[in-house]
Image (cartoon, rainbow, N blue to C red; front, side, top):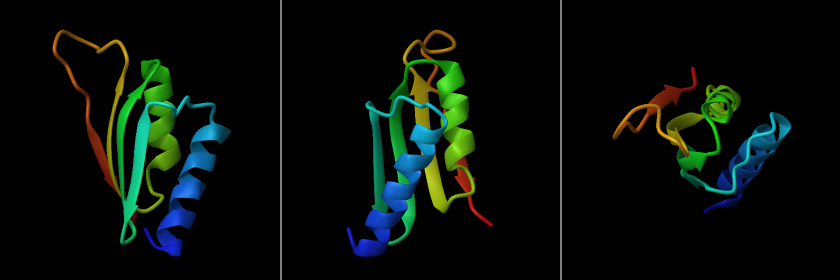
Length: 83
C-alpha cells in the first residue's frame, strides 16, 4: 500500500467513526486508489450509515452485511463508484 492508499484508508476509517459505525469487523483495503470494504456491522442501521459515509469517496466496492442477516441466507451487497 502506497502513501496515497494509506491516506485514503485513514480518511475512510475517520468517516466511519464520525457516523458511529463499529468498524471492528470490517476489512478496508485500498489498492491503487480502489477501495474494497467487506465484513459485518452490528445492525442494518449501521450498515446503511457505513454505506452512506463511504459512498462517493473513491472508486469503491462495498460488501457489508449486518450481523443478523435480513432474511434466511441473505447477504446484502452494494457497490458504489465516485463520479
